[in-house]
Length: 176
Image 1 (cartoon, one colour):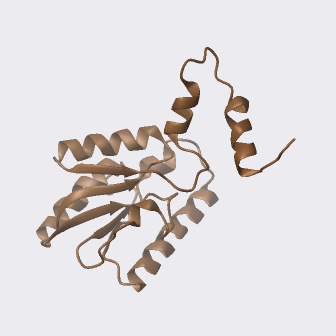
Image 2 (cartoon, rainbow, N blue to C red):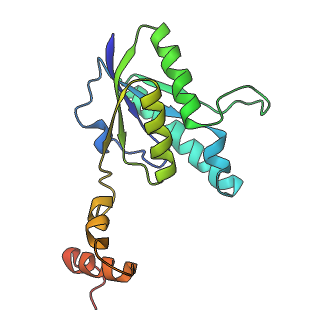
């Protein structure tokens, strides 16, 4: 069986995410992974990590209850276990496991990650696996990276104030 593998990151737990546009419950899979790198890349309080992982697991359970096919990698209970430490390594391992079960992804789908580092790592992994990566706009924001790129063109100096001011007017937020 072939379909799309929809990558859902821990800060994108929303069924209305662009990653789910056109999702086929019969042929597509949702992929999620808990990996050490995402909890240690930047210092984070342990309580925040616990809440974050709990939210991911609740979202996974809700998707399963709705009939979605989900491939989910949990952090190992034993910290010395030889589990994938990065999203890329976890994705590669999951794809191998899924292919043994008869699911071969034809494409990876992803809502634009908040971090460029994550997007680049997943882009490189997709290229390594010879899979197309469909990166979609994250609808949780008022503007896109492209909007900011257009704003930045030709400017000698970048100040967010000058980027945000037209957005505040457009959406009638904090008008002064």
